[in-house]
Image (cartoon, rainbow over all chains, first blue to last red; front, side):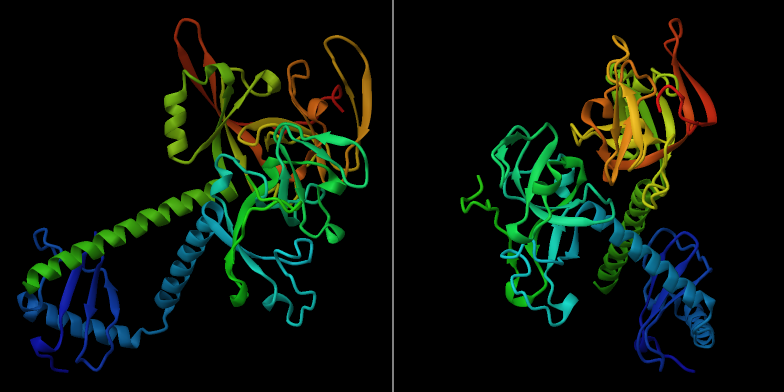
Length: 240
Length: 209
């Protein structure tokens, strides 16, 4: 295998014990990143151009490519895949905990807002997928009309999506009954937009704010319904 | 020109690599502290100011902390304890009566309190309504999906006797053992005593159940 200096470029990035050699073009081998446990002190400059190490680096890279060709699919390749997927998992989990996540909405309890059509030909594909932001969990400041995701108070594994209609200190009149309830401190009253088909605070009472797991801000999935969710009260009035 | 450009590209690439490593480290820290275990500083409300610098450092490094009154007095110190809490068993539903748990307060969601679970869903609890004044007791059944929590010091504890049973979803973690307990000494200002592995999950005293 013969190489001429114009045919490729070598750039070297110093890590502490590893160096990454990127070899591009003209070799009959596509450009790949090879890691070697080979440290070569060269002052402190992080980059070395090709002509400087034409002789030495040249031979090194040729042998590296041969090694890489024969070692394709060895445990080190699998190890790299495992490492990168682990890192992706960590980052994804952190983002979904701290910033935002995407959840599908099932059921018709929020019917005019989510899942407005009663027919479900494809199940998961036609269900609405919504963006849930977790930033509000830092100080638990919510307002009337926010759509929130919360753990069901009767079963911690279930999550529900409902709209907050009353905040701590408000008086709310319970439907189908004549008494008013004062929402205790640190609790809120949640109701679905579809009152005929919704399991909400009318059956289990006010829920603690600590059960809330996020605030729904946007609809993401059915492409014709992508958009922001406005803050409104089920009575028809606008939120304030 | 080419050399200059290549140098800066290399520097940018290397710094991006370093930043990615740092971000991955922070993510790992977050996941460990949220899903596996973390040390927690449990301490009294009035000593808060004294320790606020260390608490700030602790918060920056993503350790959590909480404030509690004298409600867990025989088990946890008044001056403050560093305990190890784990976050696996409550997700699997493995916490039971007698476990010391971290709970988001139902009255103030920003506050996390430490109490002991006395009864799980469906169990019958009888408790003294006001133990310092009278012997009057009440009996309730814990509803589905809820737990009944009480402090170990029943005379000074704001727990389920005030706000009723709490939903299981408010449980944030289970306290495994004490790592460090802090004893306030009158002469020397603060004395830290290392006290590894004192298991806190002891049986429920008979006066409470």
